[in-house]
Length: 499
Image 1: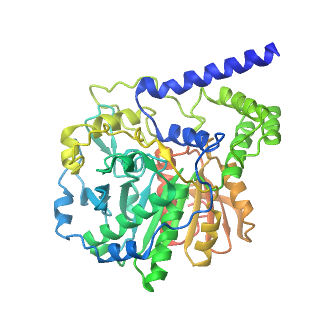
Image 2: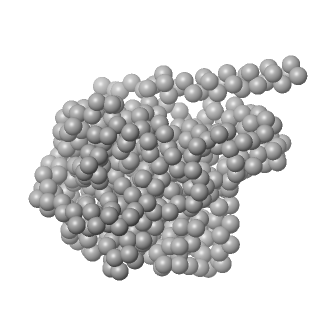
Image 3: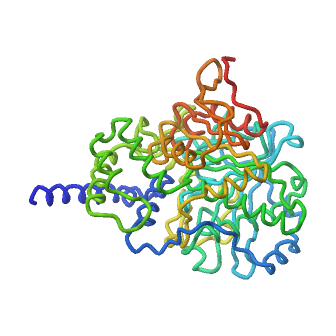
């Protein structure tokens, strides 16, 4: 009994110390946000609604949305002439606010980069980050697939030569309210969020944004994202399909979705995480077997044996970054006087460089951001004010089935060094769908190297791994991620031969 108590005390102390890291550094990252949310979601007596997602619109909403016109001239006001410390580029970029609820004073911030070449012939791609509560500006735009990354001085930028605007016109959205520069004049909006509210606001943003940029209304449109955007992306796609059918015309020309290291199905996602831990020597086989036996992952109330086993697993994995189990940690958050030489692989301290850059008044002015001088927070990569998430469906698999039935392209990708939503989780979640295989598992290639592995299913769904990439795939394998999105947008299989 004494051994049990001492072990439990040690585990609780370790978990307490790990939880203070965010407080010490003053930053909540996308990695931490998802882990904290899952703990809240599975906590005993959690009030989070886990039922299947359904759209949250009524006819009055539709009438308001589709009659509301945004002044097209606002587009020119949103044009970004040049960001501080930015190298020269030949494409246009825009940033600004789009109102999603006039009565509440709720507006979302966006950052948009046109394609580097052939913008008129290339599609429109929306990128969403997860959390919930994390910024697509912080991660997607400036640490992953955007055209620039922030240098270690927190003042200057360097080019990302594998930016996704080589393949599409790319739109980044900070959502929901309370995330990044997105705001509301109604205080409850930035404290209370949920899947349904987020999908509704994201759709309203998109419709109003297309009024401001009407040249993109008829373009092929795709939605992409990672992590908890495994909810956001399918839920927005479902809402678009609903309105297209309701209006009996194409309101938004949606063609497909692309989700990476995505939260898909709670039970298999979580079981797969422990399977990955054991198979990569992070926990023992015996501990994994105990977790799989004792834990249900389908309800809030778990046994004490389950809780203790999971605490032991957390004790073992806490000292490393489980979002890329082979990556170094950030040990010095200070900025440098001169920029370090840029690397294709993201610097582990890049969150701090981005925070410093985004909180500069000259940067905010250039971005047309923080125009209301938000009082509740400095800009952060993940919201520290959005504290109550009301609904999060336990699975999005029914939505994936809906998309396949409706002829949408569905691609799911997985960085294979991510331990939080690992490849084992995604494979197990897909397995539930019992889809017939069109093209069996095989390696795909880029520049005479294996870029990852892929399997194609009947019904236009593709699963692909990205070799050597963590949770935020474009941060670690930028060239492979660009190749992946190019093939996704073109609707072509990943190359199965050396090139």
